[in-house]
Length: 173
Ligand code: ATP
Ligand code: MG
Image (cartoon, rainbow, N blue to C red; front, side, top):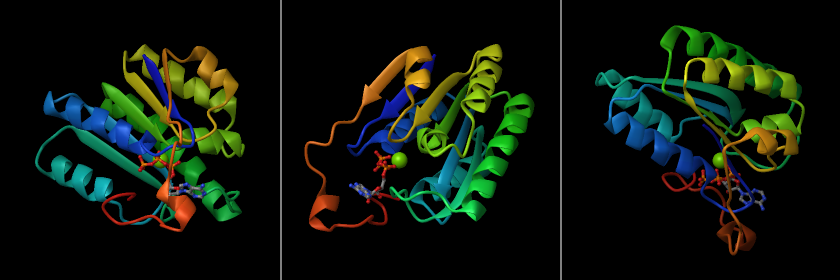
C-alpha cells in the first residue's frame, strides 16, 4: 500500500516514524530515507542505534538542512537529495525492505528536485517487492494522491511556529 502523509499541520514525519517503530517491533525490514534534513536528528540516532543492535533497519540521510522549511532548495542540496534517491533505489533491491519511508519526498517533488517519473519508478520497484511505501511532506502532488491507497492530511489548527517557536531538539528533530 502507498501511504501519503501531507498537509501543513505537525505530525507527518512523526507518523512515519511511529509506523516504522511498530514494524521494527515485529522485525520487519524498514528502509527510512530522510531527505533535506542533513544534521543530527533524534530519529537518526535511534534508528542507527537499533540497527547496531541487530534490528533490520537501513537509514539513508540526504540533505543539508537542520529541519524542513519552505524555501526553495539550493543547487548543492538538490544534488544531495538526488544522490540519496539513487542510493535508495539500490538499497531497495539489495536490502529488500518490507516498509520504505521517503520522508519529505513530497517537498522534493513540489520543487522538481525529483521527477514524478522517478517517484513512480520508486513506487513500482517497492510494489514489485510487496513493500509498504510511505511518502511524507507538505504539498503532495495530485498525481501521487491519485495513485495512493491512503492519504492523511495533517491540518494545522494551531502551530507554535506561528508564535515564533522554532524547531526544538527532541520535539521537531
Ligand atoms: P514532525 O517532524 O514534527 O512530525 P512534520 O513532518 O509534520 O513535523 P514538516 O512539514 O516536515 O512537519 O515541517 C517541519 C518543520 O517546519 C518544523 O521543524 C517547524 O519548525 C517548521 N515549520 C512549521 N510551520 C512552519 C511555517 N509555517 N513556516 C516555516 N516553517 C515551519
Ligand atoms: Mg516532516
